[in-house]
Amino acid sequence: MKPEVIEHVWITMRDGCRLSARLWLPQGLTGPAAPAVLEYIPYRKRDGTRGRDEPMHGFFAQNGFASIRVDMRGTGESEGLMADEYLLQEFLS
Image (tube, rainbow, N blue to C red):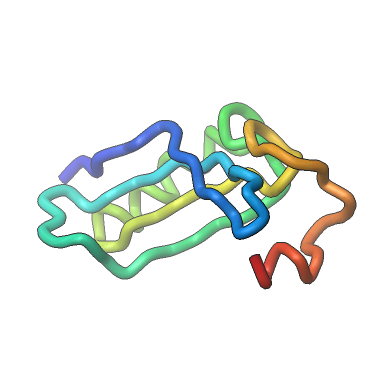
């Protein structure tokens, strides 16, 4: 089954900064939630890793997991400033 792909969604952080994400959903998802796989990296979701994102995240979605690929703060289409990779602030937001 081919997953539903939502090309662009916003995730609003506590401080108001919006992160850009691409979402793969299992086909026939019933209800508001599914187990999920999250990938949060500083490489742009629209070009840098796109070639490997589709098969990997598509596989997760075809096997019942929602899968989300997020551009870190200040990278890709996400808002904000990337001061460094993987700051504590990002895990607590």
